[in-house]
Image (cartoon, rainbow, N blue to C red):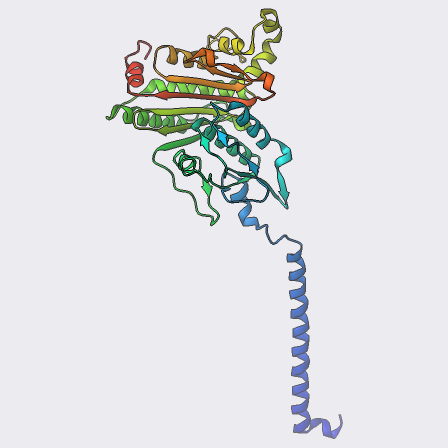
Length: 370
């Protein structure tokens, strides 16, 4: 070692030089790490946040304005403008309207121009939205500009389990109720049965203005549920119960978006129907009179449709209507029953709607089969 290398001046110089070298090396490593992280992030779309995907594709839906939405018909009344509503539902369920962005599947709709709306259309629409969520398809949209239609959307309970553009859940409305039931195991659970009992007792109590039990309403819904399990082939054998309260009456809807009763019947008894030369309206009406066998060949099965008709005939329900595939049955006014096959539209599923009032609850509780 040379003499000058051990002087105090050289030691201080060497220390400063070493310190600078270490800083440069550290800075180089930090820059390299930051670059790698930046490159990794650039491979992920900044608009797709993994923690948000569940909110968009499970049972939650952002109800916000979207680009190039599907327009809901201006007259969105299923029971008055059936053809146009069914065309909209068919388009909504088609694969061509699904937009893919990364891992997300989205469908955008707009109700902005809706001027008329009914609870039947809202019920079917909500059931389809729920069924799409089971297939991990998110829905986004807006409100009608018409104030009455907007109020009906809010009052109907359509927004239950939905979120606004600020990711806040819409409040649940006291004038309506919506329940979804899944029968993947082929049976109603005990919890489902309790929900049905509680809900139907609440309906009866509201109409009677006093605590009232109405077990036969639960039995009716249980039979319809059994019919859904047997015939519908819906996703997870799911069906939706919708309830909306008015001053002196309650409207109840039951919806499944499976195969539909009529298509199932025709597929099973095609030769029989061809030999009988019956119209689709007559074929469907015959199912409610229990003229055909059960798909499960169980003698106790296929009671649901017949029980629905019994309730109507005994004035236990009013304004009963059933829509499935290409037929709308109006039990209160059979001349209004319609076959839509010539119009090229149909509904994949089954929809029931009826009304209850105080007289209906009295008739149910006083009926001999109660």
